[in-house]
Length: 275
Image (cartoon, rainbow, N blue to C red; front, side):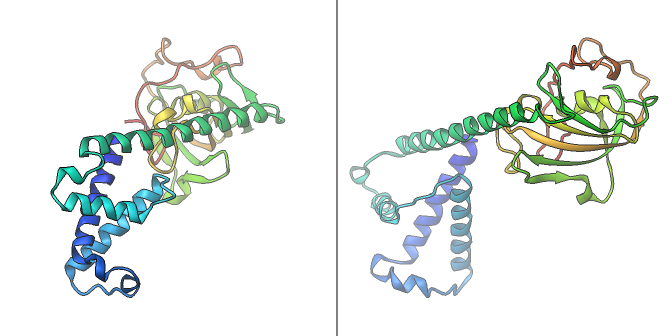
């Protein structure tokens, strides 16, 4: 996160310096409202500005005082260190502290919202909570004779959403079900999909610790987010390898008295798979 933020700030410096150099102070103001991009250099500067603006928006910088920004640019362009109110190293520290606070507040809020949601959700009809914290609701149990173990490969259709209902991924977008080893996904999936058989459908309500945790997954899944998945188990490709009893729990043993241990591999941003 910090590397991304620092890169964004560096980009701000590059773009604003280029922008100010192209338009001296006596030419700024209303003239900028009707500014035309006359050449490739103008277009590049404008494109960089759009990128910076998008970055600031994504990083939740809601208020930017253009006067202070302009003053900082002027001070830097003066090549006189005495004009700087803070030096470059201090500036990086200010940026890290600011965005670090924003990120922590967002993650704390997401964790609290997830906990509140799950506390209420477990009271819903048909919802079961396992000791791990995973909640599930079986829509269709499927074929009890063909239930996957953690070492099997599964073929599934799924839709994943945040607790506010925003869908962040769905196999429907790919036009076909997705195939992956069940022990190569987020822990909530490894544990939950073992609860149904081929042809079955299950709803999983996954606390962040069994999903993507503090790291989140790209821009789609913020850190500490609880997730909701609707999963249809299309097929099970049985593996000859026995389940590692020290790390996983076979489907038949997944009762409210036992739970699967979380997998340790990292996950991708676009789907529950882990690399």
